[in-house]
Length: 304
Image (cartoon, rainbow, N blue to C red; front, side):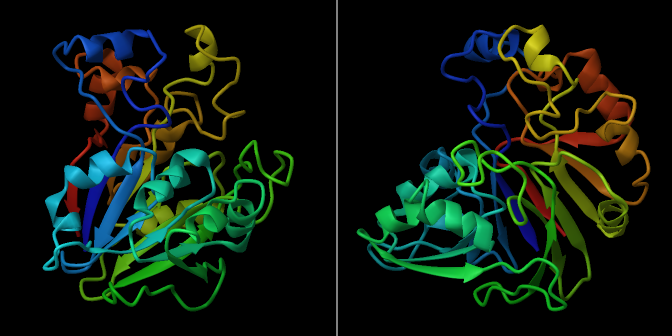
C-alpha cells in the first residue's frame, strides 16, 4: 500500500491568505525551518497505478500537478484518479471536487449523511452533474464487510464513526449526527499492514483506542497544539474542542494518547497554520521528535 500526502495543512493552508501570524509570515519570508503547506488530502494505491483520493481539498489542482503519477495517462486526456472517498462534507475536504469537473466519470464514496449535505444545502453533486457523470457509493459504517474499491482491490477500507460536528452550512444546524465524520482503517490485504487515517478527531473512546493500537501507522489529526491556541493568538474565538479537535499538548491530549501506541508509526496531518510545531526550530517540534511523532509534509510518501 502506498499513501501519498497531497496536503498536510488544515483549512487555509500555510500561509493562509489573510493571516499574519508568526508562522504565516515566516513561511512567506521563506525563513529556515518553515515550509509552505496545502490543505489536507491524501491519495492511496495498492500498486501505484490507480489512485483513490481521500478528500478533495480546495488545493487539489496544485496537489495533482505536484504528483505526476496521479495525472499521467496514456491518452491525450485522462487521469489515474479512480475515485474520491470523503471522510466528511466539510468544505475543506470536498470543495476540490469542483476542480475535477473535467473527469468524465467521477466515483464518489461517502456516508449517506455527507451525501445529503452535498445534494442539498451545499449541492456540489447537483452542480457537478451538469459537467460530468457522477456515481455515488454509500459508505456504511459498522458493516461486517470492509469497503473494497474495485480499482484498488488490494486495500480493505474499514470506516469508523467519529463524533465531530456537522459543517456550519449543514441541514443539521451544527449538531452532531451519525455519519458527519468518519475515520478510516486502510489495510493492505497482502501484507496485513494498516494505516489509521483521521484528519479530524474531537474525542477518544475505547473502540478508537483499540483500532489505533492495531494499526501499523497512524496518520492523525494534529490541528492544534493547545486548547485556546486561536484565542491566545487573537485569530479566532473558538477553542480546539469547539472546532472539533483534540489538542496535542493538553493533559489528556493526543501526545499522551499516542504514547500508548508503542508499535505504530505516528504521523500528524491537518496541522493548523497557528500550530508551533510547523516551526522546525521550536521547542514544540523538538518535543514531538523526542516522542517519536512525525509531522507530515506535502509530498510525503508512506509505504506499508
